[in-house]
Length: 311
Image (cartoon, rainbow, N blue to C red):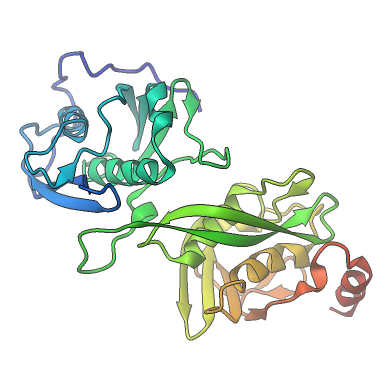
């Protein structure tokens, strides 16, 4: 994504931003041990969009008056600039950003996103380190983040970072089978469900060479929930964009098998914007509940072809 001309923080505050409706704001700090996020009430001086962006960034880079809190953006990390393009706020950091530990970086990212998206007109953020988009520990581009990326549990004001391993299923190079990919040490907010984490990583695509995403490019997750062992997945309209180089069963079971790696999920139902009517391509009903099926894992092509013919 091409950055707009960056407006550096040292420039005077512009008075032409959107007016902000007065209300309660907060700043997200780290706790003393840098293991959790703490929400602290804050009353800003600015009232326009640009002024609030500058003010919040300055506070996020400053020490709190409370010795129990730590600023989320470390002292050796500099915010070199920002730009607001529509509802996307892009922040640019210097190279010292990369010196943070994995846990501290995720907490910093969460604190910044949840603080800045309080501002009217700012709905998502993108992070750049130097001139390059931020990447995670595996080298994958993090992409844009919203408040939904770091959902709080009701009644809680703090959340922690945990790590886990994920087993995901992607299409092989020919699109006629599945390849299992295991990702170790995946860091995530404790307030993000594992099923959402799996789908986010699945939509990002594979890390293994010679493997491809089974899900149509550009597909976004709308909602995901689990009720009595059934995972209900709603994807946006882009899911209907067909890549006929990937077998339809591979698309379905890429999602189903990845989610049913979780012991809490036994079946998966897939919809498009919540609509379970119709079929996916020719024969896979969107209203059906699909169970785990490892027939399609690459290396068992004969069983795969037989199962496909019997459909």
